[in-house]
Image (cartoon, rainbow, N blue to C red):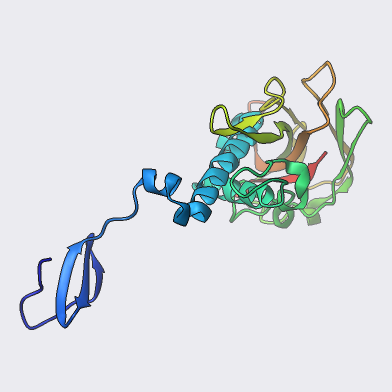
Length: 264
């Protein structure tokens, strides 16, 4: 084992090298973590293995949500949205049934963890647009309605001074429950044909300076044959400010937000 020389002795890890005292001498060696093979096969690393497997399931759950949201992710997200969403899904998996590492990934296990999730952490929808939307659906969950009884300029917070209009975007993303598969040694969707489907609806551009009543957005479920019971519909609502340019709405990149408002 190589020893440290010189008057200054170091303890700790620096640039991938670990320095420490051993039997009266100061030693250094390359800092090496456990191998993947050891983590997956050594009983001592069973909790670590379980965490890794469930993080893998959380990543798949988050990816399904983003797939259904389609272009809205690129329009509204921040740089760390994917990792934040995976972390949220990981917490939901922890509420699932089964052994650690193989617990069911089902948004219905704790939907309140996802409701209120912001695609951009620093742009909170409820702080930018302070109305209380009403979300309803029919029994078959084939139609989702978002209604806002009243909206006026006092509900429009953080609006750029040059903005003349705002536009609302509603979206739904369909997410199957995931279960552990011994065959593939990973999480698999139980309803792959439904998983990751989505649809988006937008309001017409609305003037910022006047009051609007009974704003109404409707989302039609893209699954025409009936949605499976263990498949969740995540409902999202966003707002963008902008101007009208040649009769077309041109959104600003500032003060725009989208959040999950319901899990049905």
